Length: 208
Image (tube, rainbow, N blue to C red; front, side, top):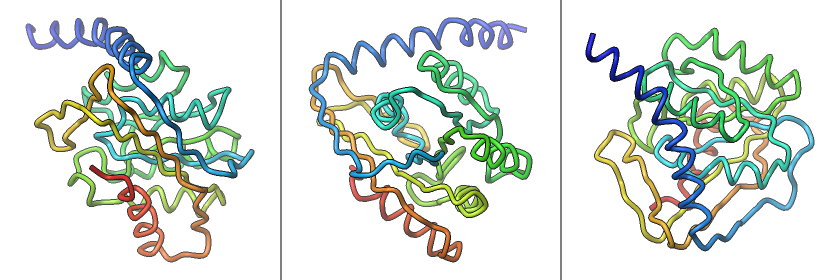
């Protein structure tokens, strides 16, 4: 009973606090954006490592001035918190995992892309291993819809890092933030392993 109460309170209190901290830390920092030369008008898939989610809504908003995206987020408790935080940035959610019985979420994601909405995904989520696995689901989405993939990264000069599987990273206020978005990746003619390797290579370019 106590655990359920604490979770309910957390779902109420943590999301607005998290969104506020993201905004305060972001606007206190010095920011540089490294953006692709060409951003498709058609729906895209944006991908980042699970531990680098903190500031990525702002990088997405540089790609799309009018946000129109849903992020694939696990149904675990931390996923519920993240989903409620992203809602403060006008970004929707598709609950599920492309690595664990993910047929339903894959079908929903493909339908979402075909309807004109971008999809966000963390290829190493929901449980890792960190910066190693690239889930096959992102390749299936891209190849079934001809959607391009853009990888996103935020590299802070100074940061805190949690002792979690994804080493979740929060940039310290008043630091330097470098945001990177790759050129759109066309995976349509690649086999699955080649496509996964291409995504991982682009995500690792600005690893730290």
